[in-house]
View 1 (tube, rainbow, N blue to C red):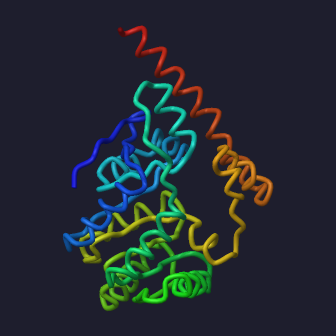
View 2 (spheres, rainbow, N blue to C red):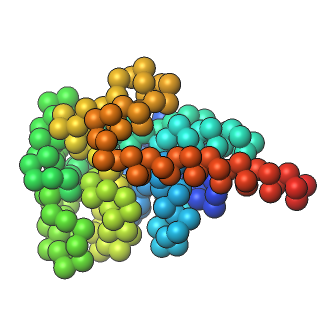
Length: 248
């Protein structure tokens, strides 16, 4: 299923809303062939400026969800507005609901020891017919790949969620996508932590106002260095706009 994409600082972002993203995800799963899904935010875009491999992975993904209010601002400022924000955490839950209805099997890989199990139990409680093919924490270390790939293949899931944090999770998926034989593999960052209740997500009103970063910084002050990506991102977007105006 084709869809429109835009480029922000050379990084591809799919211009989709929630219903469209779910329809695309369903079509990718039904295809039976391996596809990678990424969730893009400002940190991803900034990391991609210095990491050519990561940028190539994002730009080659079957779907690059716009997960971040900074992207919505940038797209609008650059004259190519995005339809809406489609977050990774919400997408995991929506895919779980879809899987419960359609009979798709999920595998949860990554996060701290026990978190994937807890997340699986929460999802199974919320969606009673959901089939969890397996859970495993493991790590993105190359020396563990063969064992993990064998474990996933034996479980035969339709969807693989990988929570190793970016860009490790996305690189791990890209390296192993073909031999995993999973129709849809998606890097989900801290989604397991939020769904399991290990981490506290910002209230809905803060999410709607674009203040989720402030809530996360309050609860995880060690993230302040990563938050510096946002003002740098804004500066680069403004420079890009000025450069485009000069050329025209």
